[in-house]
Length: 168
Image (cartoon, rainbow, N blue to C red):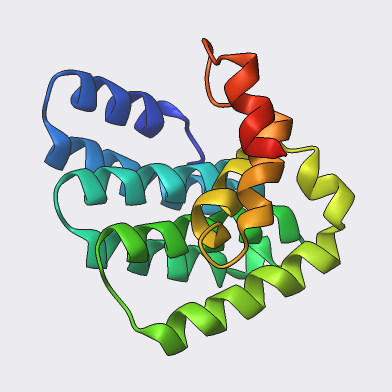
């Protein structure tokens, strides 16, 4: 119980091209993280499971796992982890062209509430959250994109003139 071997098994199966086996091992990893009551590991396992399902073309299942994960009692005291799961869900919904405007609006409200709860400054210090926010809310809030470019950059080989042009 609580072993991390499922995560390793999932990575090996993925590297070997067996995404179905990787998904099954990831499901077991989610269960093991819950058993161990490790919130950070649980959130990471749920995100991994959702990414694998999305790669299999199962966006509906991916967003469902992220929804269930964000609602788990173990994550209730961890707004930053719930925020990560909700932002990933919003991005899966958009990429998969799932959900409607009402769902997106509702998730956006939840995201903004979690940002306030966790602290906007703490959010901007986490580059993963900055990137997820830009992807999830950048269309409605272009300032999020500019902030992400300013804080994180465009990649490893970005042209500083291009970055400055986008940010300004």
